[in-house]
Length: 171
Image (cartoon, rainbow, N blue to C red):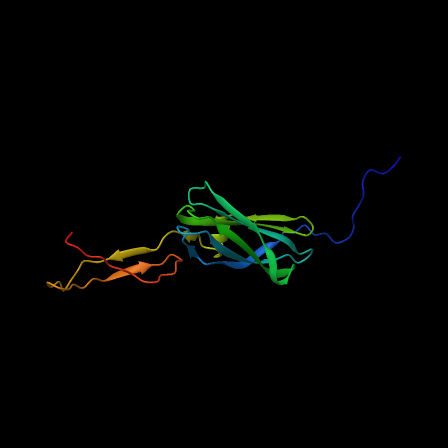
């Protein structure tokens, strides 16, 4: 009869690709006025067939929203290179820390998923903070009939701060 199997005796590729580093820029954004693009830089390696694709997925703080994109090789080569994924957060995205997970596939079909927890344990990719700028003021001091001293801090949360205005009144 006809044979119904085949024996492969050459070198095999059964090892999935690996994340070796990376970053997210910017690390905090504000979508109150308009959508914002975020760039995920993933250092990935696969010694044999090479990385063929990288998917980055952000999950909202409460888990109800996801935003994902597919990367392109921006430096190096498929065996060891940097992949860049650009995703756009829509206007009014959920406020708080969005968590990144990654999926990698090599040219042979070996697959590896990295949860946000695994990436954090490896020291890569802190949660992306989404929210408006926040201001905090102290109490007025050196109060006279015509002036007062007021100190405060502004945390931009990824926003461009053009200026700060402090309003005053009797309350």
